[in-house]
Length: 395
Image (cartoon, rainbow, N blue to C red; front, side):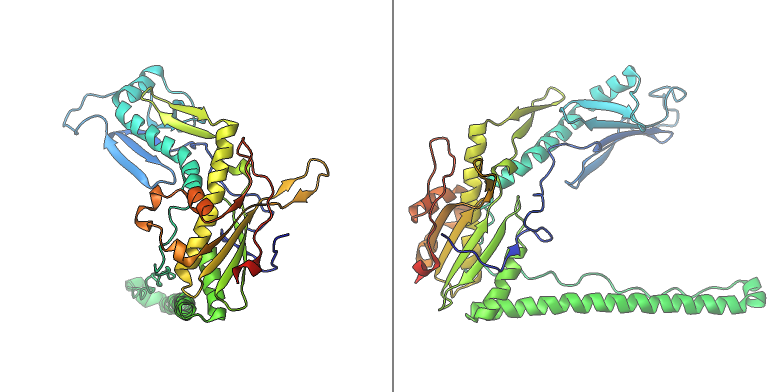
């Protein structure tokens, strides 16, 4: 049997074991491209939610003194919504999602074909992003010697002093008491805002100082600080799918064993999208065989990433055991099992030979297999249970 540790940390902050895995929906969403028509002209407002990409473009040319109307204002006035549906088609509606007159919809598609095509390409990238992140999980592995990232410095500006009240004549004659009460209330609110700002600043800067101290002492081999630094780094990794890690140091604090609860095969996205220039998205469904191969690649990449984080953060660690297991139901008993599927012992001297300048060309499966990974895959790329390395093998 492998090792199980009571200490567990969540790689994705706020998520815990048995909580449904998070994921990016392959739905493209209802908003992203709109056209506004009014007295000021006709404008296309394009953007894709979640990407930060947007722009505004006039459709009816520069404004002239006596412009010819591009459409009949009495027939339609308002905003036009152009959106990509879940099936990849482009629909054009008004603000309340009612279909537009065919002539107006045709004009929008014709005059903004290039803009719509660009948006479709961005939408395709968004759909494919989840799979890309799963298959490239190792690419952000730090190089040995890379300094860990500190929490960001406090950046919120200090609350500004309230502007002095400027009383009018009637205020000075009849409302002096209310003016003074308003002035006191404004000043009290400012003092409260200032106190809240100071508390937030001190808390963030205090955390930053503590993490910086932990990094410094961890680099010197102090075991308590190595644990604190490792907790911080692992909890800050943004994994494409929920991944949970437990760990234990060896007696001499020169080795580290990590137990990785890997995502499920069902978490691998099955759909990809492509904009082929036909005014809509074309979707493809990956085969079961391809999904299984994708899952194998993600598991190898996840263990590769964990080992790399350890060697970059903790110079005192020269031996690292990383074992991954999955959760699945036994069809014979209905019980939830946690079989190990991948286990490898990595030594620092071997890790240092990797060319991290070309990490995108590194195949984690080839690397870990060459280092002696224990794995049992059948011909259909399905994992069979293995006996993982034990922590005493790090001695």
